[in-house]
Image (tube, rainbow, N blue to C red):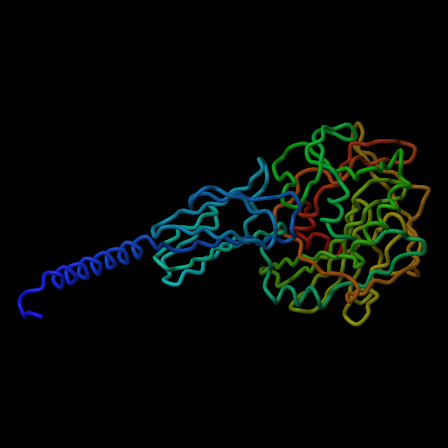
Length: 407
């Protein structure tokens, strides 16, 4: 072969250069459009059926409604303002925490507005977790330890069919109505802790399929159904500190499905509060109908440091010792009326005994439900009254438990 110029070699070399350039360009183009991943996580407590939140600002809007759940978004590199709002009108946000895990730390969050400004780089994954707790932020470990230390022993009376239950179990058996009971307009078929009204509108909860005046025999059956689905009772706690006096109050709140006494109504909220001074118990107060009864610690019945609450049959009023207690009942029709009753509270203490190991201890906080917990309060011989059952978090003895001290 001759040794002169070979055009085909030059053409092949040029083609290789062009191919290399195209490959380099394709690689650069791929790198510039690689983008990253934004992961949005939802955590709720409790897990609410039929409740969801909407997320916007990062691609098409989407909803999350299960807890825990997450949604992954492949996105071009850039800045995004991710926002969360309740999907349903009137649903409270109750966002208690918002945190984003970002490898290069250029993402900021705002719990108040429920937004995250996300800086997303090529090849980066940023995970933002929205945490909702319907009962508000959890207190520190010291408050929980205190609540566990003084958690009460509940001694029920013979023949008592009801035990303290979780709020969500009561709501699962109820519907939410607007107006005044018992003929209010249906607002929610399945209310949850996340959907209860918090604004001052007239509303009430109604246990489905039962009424205190016309169908009271349904309540024991509903109680059995609740106990079958969740065998452990529940006791709620709340700690309040008074720095001026050095006193601390440890409150325990109990929700019973039904109050079956001289007064009859759904959602019987009762409680016992221990008051400490400089870490030592001074005494405790028990809810009993429309008031509280104070007992010095030296006169209380205890199991170690756990106070014993003798629960009256039907009314679930609390007492420091077994016995029969004369009471009076107050009600509102045209004005306020109070009278002694022909019935007495019977707290035998010989029924089921619920010690702290046998029930779930749950913190009670957050925004209170603004309506009534009952479809009507009925007084024997009087009928339907205008009285409501208010949320414990709206009561003065929740925010100021020291007012009953020594009374």
